[in-house]
Length: 186
Image (cartoon, rainbow, N blue to C red; front, side, top):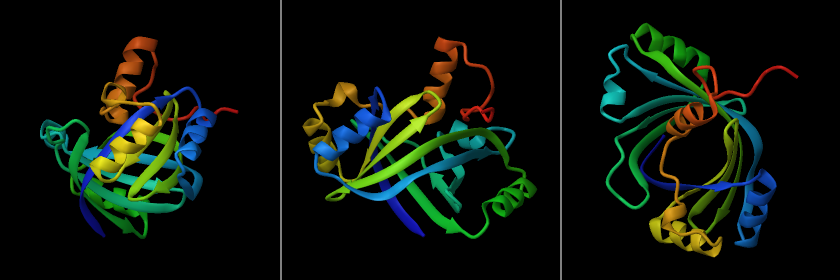
């Protein structure tokens, strides 16, 4: 289990190839290969977690499952929030247990993720159904320095969650469906 104060930003990229080039140019080293992450956000029917701007997530990360609680975002130039996470043996069983407690999945999202590190910062390439993002997570000075080396400054920082980005994409692009998942059709 880990408990920490998560600090992160997202940066938009034209493609995974452009993102990978930018990450390699700053000297980051690969640490976890590309795999599918399938995330489910849960809440009670009255929406009390969303009202508090908190998140409860069950993630299937290429066959490994995690249960994560994220507290409300704190006022900052980047996304800062409490994160408590633990690896679980069986994500499907955890979802079933949470359902028995009255929690329901209200949003599902998928992304292909690959991870790199440079110093104390983790850099991820997230290929989503709504675009490609690089997420920088770690200490604030490291995040800012890497973003600057990539030619990015605070106006480029994307602080919205993938759920919020999906809602914007739905409105702008007339995307149908309640979830941000890849089309299962070939």
